[in-house]
Amino acid sequence: MLKARYYSTSELAKKTGTSRQVISAIINENWKEKRISQSTYDRITKEMHDIGFVPNRTAISLKKNKKDRIGLLCHGPLYSHTSTALEKLNHYFLGSQKSVEIHMSNEGELCKAIKDMMGNRVDSLIIILSPMLPNFGEPDLRDKSLAPFIRPVPHFFYNFPFDVHSKDVEKDLLACGSHLIGFSRPDAYTPFLQNLLKKNRLKLLIDDKIYSLLEKCRQTKELCEGLDQVITYPNPQGGKLNENPFLMGQNLARDLLPKIKDSKSDFIVTFSDGIAQGVAHYLDEHGISVPSKIKILGFDKIDSIDFLKFPISTIEVPVDKMIDKLIELIEKPSKNNFEHICPTKLHLE
Image 1 (cartoon, rainbow, N blue to C red):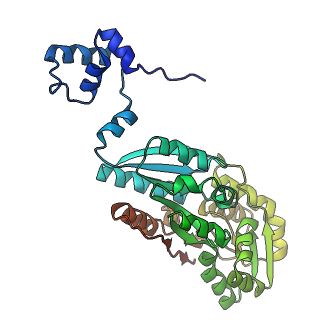
Image 2: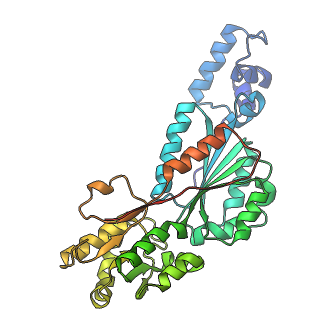
């Protein structure tokens, strides 16, 4: 791999026939106080431009300490509503002129990424948890080596999956001073299941990743037990981060078509709105119209959903409320530890 070649202050001093102290004074914009001449300033800044010299901003910020710097860590693949959250944070950071350092980390690398950001002396830390991580990031959050590094820095876990992990994960993070901002996945499906029972639509074809979450919660498990039929199918997204969700939905519907015809399900529950649209498109091409013959539930309520061809039901992730809470905590730091659970909203077609 090619590596960046940065000039050091020592190399620049040698190249310009000056000292590191002179270079440092020019970089830190106090050269007049150090009685450095205008001609020397002009000569050195020209040389800096000619050779592409860029000062080490980390070192400069530690010396100047003019404003707080926020560390933003995207842990796992950006996907759907977490991408929307990142866009909203981008607008906030630009509008407020916050100094931000962005890192990305993969499964198994959370602690290492946090250590790297702390090495750059961030003053607070936002960790966006991807819904695409195995078991929503539980192995990383359980890592015992995490606590000593997050404890000294004000930090916020965004998109924390409440009621998915065991309670001791939340308890351990709160003990480290964490603010957990997110929503309850099982609670998100409770109104949907209640509506099914109320409408006597009792046959369900559901993504097994979603069903495993419903099985962990007593209320949603009991609601599922009240249905006449629950058939699960493998989550189609595992490891397919580059695949278009719409095409993924089409392929899923092709595989499920025999089950759909045999089971005469009332609802198909999918992992995202994109997958739901792909399923609806394929079924419509094969004579099963949506939503008249079968209904489909997506997830996220993507911005374009009202303009899509096939009407589907969906669960709206409370991105605006979650981001508003995060910004509130950034602007008005609290010494208390909180779980910030934002309610989802069911949209039925």
